Length: 623
Image (spheres, one colour):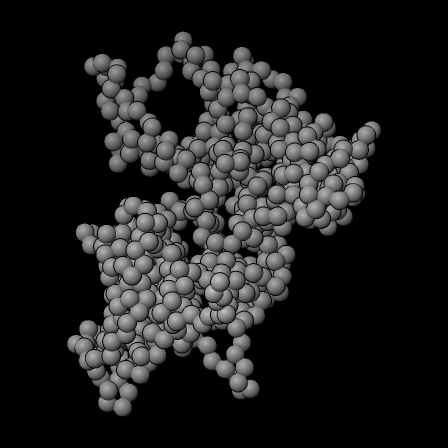
C-alpha cells in the first residue's frame, strides 16, 4: 500500500484569496459595504453606487476621495496591503488602535478572485502626474495598470462584474434579485446614516433608489439624514440623545415608545462611525424600553457610540459587524441611562402618528340629506331657546347625572384639587399642555380643550400609567419583601447556564430571588419576591439564563416585576365604562402632566390623541 508522506501542504495564493472571499464576500451587499468603507476612508464627500440584477451582473462604486497613483493601485490588490494601519516609532503594529472603517486589506483581492474587477483611480497630481490609471483582475489573474481617461478631479471608481463567476457554487446560495437588492439598499442606508456629511446615491439600473445630499456635520444635519431614510415621522417623534460617561460618548436619536415597530430591524447602532449588529447593544436598547413597550413591539433608534479604539475590539468578525467591549457594563449602563433619561424628559408626549392616523380615519359629513342651517355656513347661530337650556347644559359631561364618587382618585389628591377650585377657575386651564376637560364620551374617553386644539384621553390607559409609576416609586423606597418556599425549587439548567445565573446571585438576591448551587448544573431556589405571588420558577430561571447568555443582563426578572406591577395597576385603575365628574377628569389631566411617560400606558399604547385646531379647520374646509 502506497503511503502519502505529505500531511501539511501550503495553499496557493489563488486558493487563499478564494477562502478569504468566502469570509468577506457573502453576497453582493458585502461587496458594496467593503467598497463604500474604502471610499469613506479615502475622504470621499460623494459616493455613487449603481448595480444591476441584484448585484450579480454588475456593481459600480464611484467616489471623489483622494484616489491612488500607479504604485498604490498595484499594492491595493495585494492581499493584506492597506493604507489604514501604520507601525509606531518602535515598528509595532497596533491592531487595537483602529480608526478607519476597514484595515485588513482583504476586500479588493478577495473580490478580484471571484469576479471581474476593474479599478480606475486618479489623484489631484503629485509631481506633475495628473494621469488616471486603471487595473483589472479576472478570477484572480492580475493585468498590468494602464492609463485611463479622467472622470473628475480625484477619486476612484470600482467596477465589479459577474460576481461569483469563478466560484459558481456560491451563486446557488444567493437569494432572489429582489432580496439581494433589498440587502444592498439596507447596507447603503446604514452607511449613509453613519456619515451625514457625505452624499450618497443608489441606482438599481432602472431607477434611483436613494439620492441623499450632503448635510451639516451636526445634530440637525444628522436628524435630517435620518428623516430622509426613516421618514418624516421619525423626525417628528425622535428624542435627542447626548450623554457621556468615563470617556464613552453616546449621541443620536430615539423614537417615542408610541412610535414603535413590530420588529427590531429599525434599530441602527454605530460604533466610532461603523454600523454594527451587536447583541449587547440591542439588549441595552431592549432594557431601556422594557418599561414602556409590550412584548413584540420594538423602538426605532439610531445611536452613535464613540470611544477610544483601544476599548473596543472590531476584529472579532471578518465582516466587522460584531464587536467586543473591554467594559461592557459601562457601555450598557450608558445606553440604558441615556435612553431612560430622554424618555423621562419627554413627559406625557405621545407620537404624532397617532393623531395623523386619527385624522385619516375621520369621515366627512354628507349623510344628513339636504339639511342646511338657516343662519349660513359660518355665521354666529342665534341664541338658544331658554326652554332648551337644560339640555344644552347637560352635554358637557358634568351634569347632575354624572357620578360624584371619587374613591379611585383619593391617592391622587382630588381633594386638594377641589380645595384649589377657586384658583383653578381663575387660571385658564386651556393653557395647560392637556387643557381643560369638556366632556366624557361613552364613559371611556375624556375630551379636553387646549389653547390650539383638542385632546381625547383614554381614561383607563392614562390612569393605569399613573398607578404603575406610583407603585414603582413605592417599591424603590422600601426593601422588597421575599417569600420563603416551603420546599426549595430545584431547576436543572446545565453547567454553563447555572454558572452564569449563580454569578449574578447577589444582584438577584437584592431583587428578591435567593439562589444557591445544588450539584452540577442545578440551582435551588430558596426565596422568591413576594410581589410575584405564585409563579413558574422553572420558566423564570430558564428565561433568566437565556437572557444572561444573550445580553449579560438580568432582564427577565425585571420584566416579571414590571408585568406584575402593570397587571396590578391595570386592575386598580379607573375602568372604561365608569362616569367621571369634572373634578375627577381635570385631576387626571393634571396628574398626567406631572407624571413621566404618561403619553403611553404600560403596554405601549397611547393614552391620548391630540388634534390641532388647524387640522380640524382643514377637515371642515376652513383652510
